[in-house]
Image 1 (cartoon, one colour):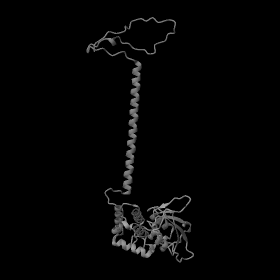
Image 2: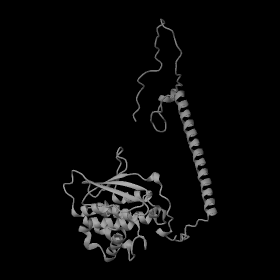
Image 3: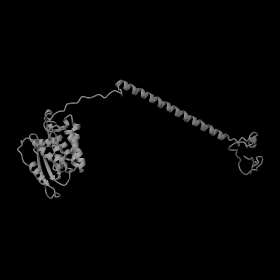
Image 4: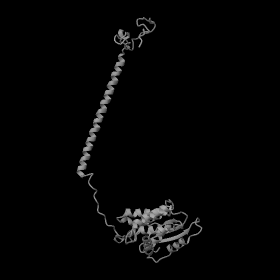
Length: 329
């Protein structure tokens, strides 16, 4: 760059007033007379005056930066050491448990299923028995209530009483036939426990409701879920949760629930094919014994048979006929 003469002469003497206190300079600069002289080698102006405080600040910053880097390096070493110790513990546990990633999974022996005859007929817990209300649509008749009433006639007495809601102008012939059958009085032992069921025909669609507490009004929706509830509080030999194939039974009951509540015909056909594959060539979903799945399947197919009648295979018809004969549907 071009060299310029100093703007201010350093030798100028400034007369200070004597009416004020004099103070020593706050910052003392070490002035180098050669600072403003040109560099003989480059011909450029040399650097400005050196400030001792700036040098001290730079030293402090450099020291602080070095301390932070040192602390960060120490922390990283501690983390790496902990990771190494954790890896050693995992390898020790792997060796102790003899885990081998390439080893094939152990095949667990299948547990034989218990039949209904093998389940012990225990006394019914009377504290679990509670009267309830069922809201059902005449278009979706809950045939499972009639099946359980006939199957439990020697263990539990289901007293069903029917009413019609104002939203239903007239009952269908199918609903009237069911009502006459489920309310028919049968000769039962006087010492049998009983549950009073109030069936109200109401426009609730496929979502059949069960209400155990009128004050709180927390309904149990779905005929399949009503079957689950009654299987827990009813005779123990009909409780599928005491068997070993609980997951399989729950999957079949869920499929029956979807068969009722899916309005798309193609979806119903797909669910029906799934149930047919689970049934196979067997007489029923529970084998030789009549199971809760057979009742739920028969009731669901009878309610939607107008849309899936052509998709019911002969073995399904045979299973439904068996349920109708044994359960009095």
